[in-house]
Amino acid sequence: MKKRIIIALLIGFACTVGIQAQIFWKVSGKGLVKPSYLFGTHHLIEKDQLKDFDKVLNYAGQADAVVGEMDMTDMVAMQTKMMQVAVMSGTTIKDLLSAEDYALVDTEFKQLIGAGLGQLGILKPMMLQTMYASLIYLKSQNLTKQPEGIDILFQKKAKENNKAVIGLETIEQQSAILFDFLSLKRQADLLVKSVKEKQKGIELLKRLNEAYLSADLKKISDIDAEDDDLTAEERKPLYENRNDAWMKQLPALFTKQSCFVAVGCMHLIGDSGLVAQLKKAGYTVEAVVMN
View 1 (cartoon, one colour):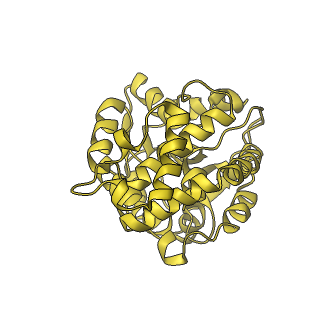
View 2 (cartoon, rainbow, N blue to C red):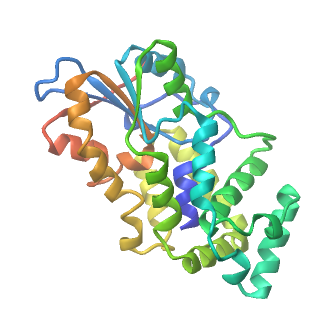
View 3 (cartoon, helix red, strand yellow):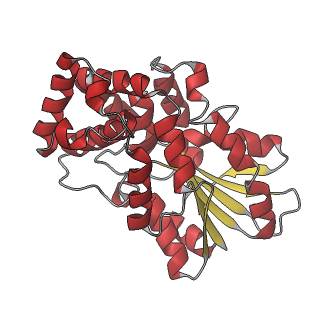
């Protein structure tokens, strides 16, 4: 589980590459008056790492609406709601871990941020896992603060141009998916494993960074497939089920207006990914190559 959360949220690498075909697509046909666009992101990558980012940002600015996993234009409200969902009721992390594992995770958090499980232990293990992955990411990249995600920049561009920003999920829906689709005990066990296998996770990030910035979704998919922490059934809520839900919304949005859709790049991959599903639905989906 830990690796897939990292894959979904935390890829970044200190180099620049052109934005290539596998992460940027034009959607047309099927009677659409104007084309829409589909862009695969990683939520913490810095815009300066993509040398053609300003060109892509112009596409977002010209569209009638920017569509994301969530509406992220009010970050304070979003983070507040997410934290409310992430708090456990009647249980703390101490109830879910052995004394030895509790001490291990507690020490790791204290070393990273100076706050241990005494302060953080009311949070669901998956929230702690997400925090831990973020902290490890920042430390491995020698960053002192979290960069502004390109997802947010696309949505800001829409607001600047008085265009609509549309979320495919509410914060409550996404929080439930991320924090409630596994039992608390299963989450806790995976949190401990992520701490014990910290170096392995860092090395995985490096490989995934390179794959994303070379726009190689096939390679990302292959690396992701190496992780057997989740069963096939446990994976479905994270990717397949969400893709299916989004495909129930996108056709109507495309018919109403031109859209720039920016979602995590893992949602573009495979037979259940948005690229394959849009093609199956009858749309013409063509790679956009930046000149």
